[in-house]
Length: 193
Image 1: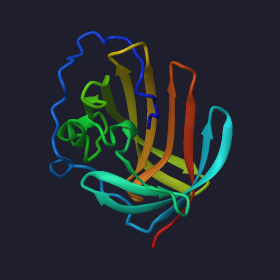
Image 2: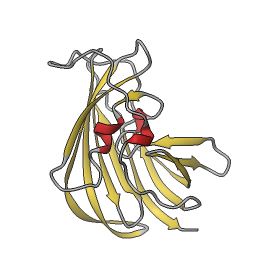
Image 3: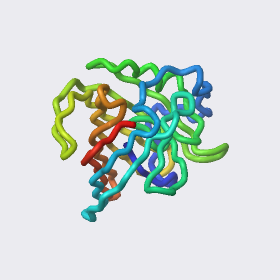
Image 4: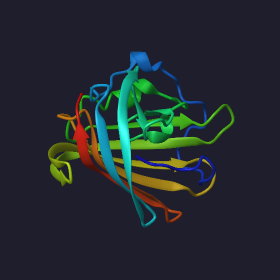
């Protein structure tokens, strides 16, 4: 999962600057998510500062996961390994082709931030399966690595997501960018409805 500002980054060689083709989310494949009402507690670290965050899973919207941070926070959307895709134009079918996850599978797609915003080039790859232990327990996961570059400026980012099919959610994330930002979360507790 990458959190980045939509300003920034250098022209990427070979990046087509035409608007990405947009496929409605409902037409795209995607993961099976944890059931609505599942609550999770996370240990989150941003640039060296650690805090505990609670999340409640809401009903999905097409292939977009929905959740709420805290007890009364706003509903938020999430595409596993593509936080910045929520509310943006991108090719849902290309993203959805990553699912079901299999070692060695990869996808490339473009995302546009608004009509005249920057274009982001995403590469996601399932690098394999791995057992991961977090404070919430041990999970068998698929490891998804993402790299993102922008057509405006020099911004580049990388992330790793450990997706646990048995949970229907990620259990660990880590991301960083070339501006020195580092962010990670790991699952500390989970309660299903």
